[in-house]
Length: 509
Image (tube, rainbow, N blue to C red):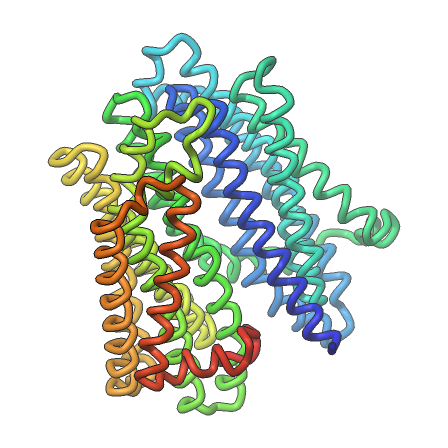
């Protein structure tokens, strides 16, 4: 087996472990604290610094790689790494201090409803303080994870991220009796330090950074001029989630924030797996086409990326719609998470399905914008979606309460996806509409047939009386067989290639 294939398998395996560990963290929080006001206070407060965390972690990778390659080509890669690491440390430190100082006033202004609980303000304030205190380590970690990606050491980069999540879980399990839910952010803080220590040991302290090199402020300034619009565009989803949380907390109902969060995290799993994987695979294809000035190849890469995304995401979300309650039960219902919380979470999760579908498609479209160096257009559309989200959340939360917030997320996702897709279509002078429609029709028809059979089985048999995990496993297996059998009957090129290549993701596009 080639080194490239081994590296590819390790990357996919480590990415899956990272996504699973993130889900496990949510399971632990749900099991220990359920949908109590303590969970509400922690989740609501965490979304504010978490927007900056995502801004740093994800945005840094898309901005640092091309910047590092440019300097490395002239023999100054290590000097550039040092400049960006030192610059990011100072920027992150300033943001950390500001966030810590403003934590208490932020909580009292944005989340006044937590004051009705004995320790509501305490939990929310200290959650923000600890997460902002972690930001300085997050910033440095983000730079070095971008560096390791540039060196094609993807697995180590993902492993270092996973270590943060695992430390968060460990602290929650070990210290929740003594510290309550504050054990979760403390675990995250310790995890960010541990992740940084791993990187220092991996490169050795001496080689970690050019300690005596003076900071080139102009180089840092030029880098951040490129970085911040990319980071802001990537953080749009997290900012919209933060807006949703503000409105959820404003409903002044215990459990709403927590249940909406659990619902979103569950429905977001397919996007985290398929969306990230397929968009990542498509990126080098369309980037190569751009370098070769081959727009036909570029269009084909976008088309195939979208259609592969549809092939996986459409039946998955259809199956989740049918099995949402047993899914929530199997994933969350243990410890402090009650059957009543399951019913509420499942009802919210169904309304979040549209959000996952549209943002998954948009993940491929976004790579097209970045490749064409039109990220500023994505940023403008993203800012528009945030404004729309504020307005739609206000309207739908007033009309429907908590379900309206989940519905608003799906409608905003549809807007964001539709506008970005339309704009990309114009930028590349269109795509092969007949090709897209033909394959989309096959996917939709196969999904509808699969869903029809599963509904009959669900309603006409006693399968729903089985334990939830067995219930899900049986129907999922039957659904997958029916879905791919119908696609093969259509001689669908994507289903055929998937089977011919044995599921090797690198060979699909």
